[in-house]
Image 1 (cartoon, one colour):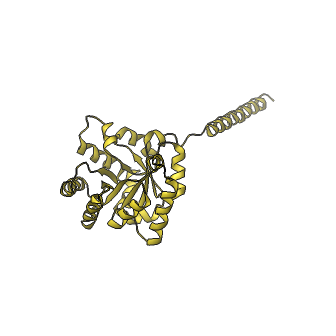
Image 2 (cartoon, rainbow, N blue to C red):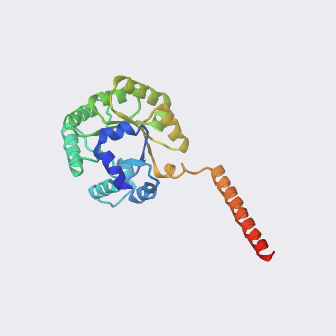
Image 3 (cartoon, rainbow, N blue to C red):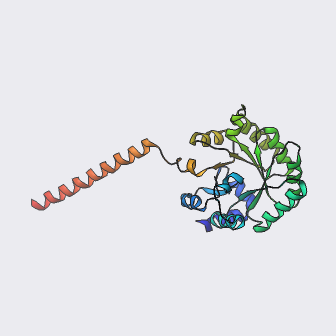
Amino acid sequence: MNESREPLNNAFKDSLAENDLEFFLDTASTEEVKKILPWGVLSGLTTNQKIFLQERGVDFKSRVLELVRLVHGPVSVELTSNGFDSMVREAHEYHSWDPRHVVVKVAMRGDGSGLSVIHALHSEGIRVNATVMMTTAQAILAANAGATYVSLFYNRIKDSGADPHLTIKQTREILDKSGMETRIIAGSIRQPTDVIDAATAGAHILTVPFKIMAQLPFHPKSEETIEEFDRAWQEFLNTRIAQSAFQRTT
């Protein structure tokens, strides 16, 4: 399965054009990735400092590279330093681990320093995921600075009192009209309905925590219907067996 995805990731822009809606897993857990990979729906991963805190004791670089080997797709790794020079150095380090797959996450900062880093990295051909964004204005600025992805935090936008559906919708409309190739990632997904809400709003990519992703295939009525069909099939088989037995005795 991973090998079949490889050509798409080699031709990154072609992949984006062909797949208008993608699923990322929001995790640094290899076990979680291994459980979802067989579904055939994952295109990449997103991580951050809080996510790695849940993986206490792992070697950071080794884990990132292990995740890359698993998904053969973009893996976002967030900068942790402050100051332009330090952030750019840190970005170069992460990029050097796997230039084809590691995407550098740069936070949108109120003083504009995040935009400066995004622009500098973009000018070097380093893909950037502009993150922790709450407004359309932030997203459009990041896109213009050169971000490959803009991450809008669905529920944190809602926590702030704003409408995340409208924020994503407006961002998508502006990106489409301008012809920019920047992709919207909807993060901060807390329940299954958020996935559909963010998708209908226009997000290109839904990055979903494992506990939410694992719930998406389930519906009680589906399970009930499967059981009903299984019982019907068993009755059908029992009828055939009974008919065969009757024919042998006549």
